[in-house]
Image (cartoon, rainbow, N blue to C red; front, side):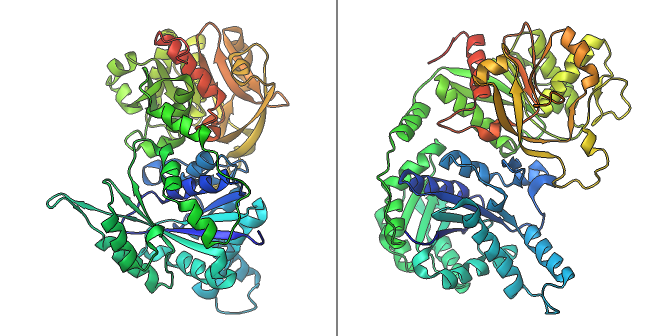
Length: 541
């Protein structure tokens, strides 16, 4: 093939319709045929990135190798397609306007009046082109965040409209993902909202080549024909996508619907080889299989919104698939534990996990859960803040001082077992200034971490400002804490674990970001193995 092809995904009718999963699954279809695939999310919000946004508003912040803080859809992209993305793969309105304004201040526009068209749209097009340049992709999939009709998304839609003219129709394809509501009173799925959404999209100059019709009910041939007729799309390009209990089944549904074949023909491509879905089908079958259940308590402060811990939940599922068990996540609010609520549920769990987070709310509740796991030999996995609070709890126990803490929560604590990193002391800006992205870690022989990874050195993704205070390394080490992962220079504690415990491991980094459904993360696998042993299942496989 010559030249990069582009597939643009837009959404209609309602938000959260599943564009991200649909785009990710489509990427998997193309990768299975041997294409080099990259994928980008265009986010209409004015924040530069989601790094300073509340998880209640945005869900989790997903971190890439290069330290970019991104939308959680990039997690879907990486997990489904099994690729590693870079910061060019998430562009926001904030980034676009910041760059254009910076150019204007430098005088790059030679005194011209700066307008949405062409200056903003040109910057958007440049950022889309950067993905292909930085990845060498044959096909770039681009998801436009939000829904057609959102005022903040119009510059992005105008930019991709222009790209069809710039690149040629033969090199671009538009996919519109919509929702078919079910009217219970008469038992019908309705296509009218989809028709209106396509009309709005066409009024902006974009005619979809394919419509993915999402629904909670089966879509019959008559409805497919109706959508094709009224939306001016080929009937074979109207793809019903019903809601399924197993998310990883979506690529197989799109494969059976002929999505990849249509794309390849429409873009005049020749696939390097035929797809082999053997491994993926085995994955889906394993998920569907009836399996013994283990319970893992996830102790968080945003548990009302499960999207805040999307990658953690998926990594637990991945490890469960490999271990042949169903992981039943018990979502426990840390603030409830502080008030004495939820302990009955915690006591019924086979494992405890404390994920990352920021701020002092609910911290003592997490420490209560960590103390329970330590004293009762319940397998424990702490991620970032979960590792720091594991150190705080152990420090209080060893030092016999309840004031031991992190300076994030108590600036004047007598025992700052967790403290601000040296290079963070003079930083005032909050956005994009943490220790972010991929860093190396050397594993110490004979430790649980080394046993889990089965290698001497690793690289993992970080997102934090605070770290283990080395002033306490000797005293905690003498009393049973093992520093099983260190930075190459030995100065930073990256992994801590406890002796004489079945599995109590905390990581300064976020291993969940590198877990894949067909390649579970080693630490999560080791954790679930310990959980199975606790539940009396041994290794469930």
